Length: 269
Ligand SMILES: [Zn+2]
Image (cartoon, rainbow, N blue to C red; front, side, top):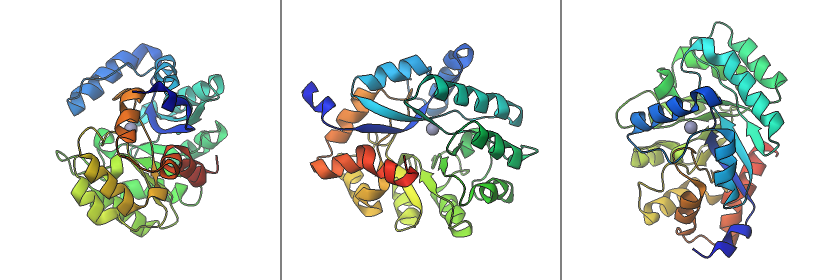
């Protein structure tokens, strides 16, 4: 590709993962197994920055999911520290439905200067619209956004209908619905998640699986002004995701919105 285009846009990566160095390799491998996708890289900060630099990414939403409640505090501390070290990072913390004190988790996230919470119902094994999960949203509504993994044809935890139910019960909660609202369940996602206030979408880990026509259709249906570019690093590297994105053929203005402006609008960044 003509590399000149890499400098033309301001780019924010709205969905990327980092892990503490000593577990990065195993964490990356186990995600690869979970999704049966060979990981492009290993989820450590330096690798993320190296990959993003190739397309001139300016900021990264970084997160890491606690698969058990006892990991919460350490992961939040880790994300907070990485954000201090790397001003490019915009950190989201973690909590868990098994947490004994979700209010304290949210307080920790705020005190570390993090900006939201990432949830992954399929890894964390809870139904996204269950009473246990509602305990989390209650603390977050009107306070900070939730980035939530959506959709997996093999599991029901993060079914797009459940994501729509979160919105119905917490209309004031800002939801960033990952993977165009439903990984591997894009038709279902479109059905449940179109036209909802306060719901935004990242387009990560989607473009490799659906046709450009389908992606354009979905982005337009949700609203070009509601969608964010994201890599889901280390699932994909930035160059390949950016190329897939540019191949959608949006206008310059639409590209600018999806690549950075929408995210800034949603977060006040
Ligand atoms: Zn993710």
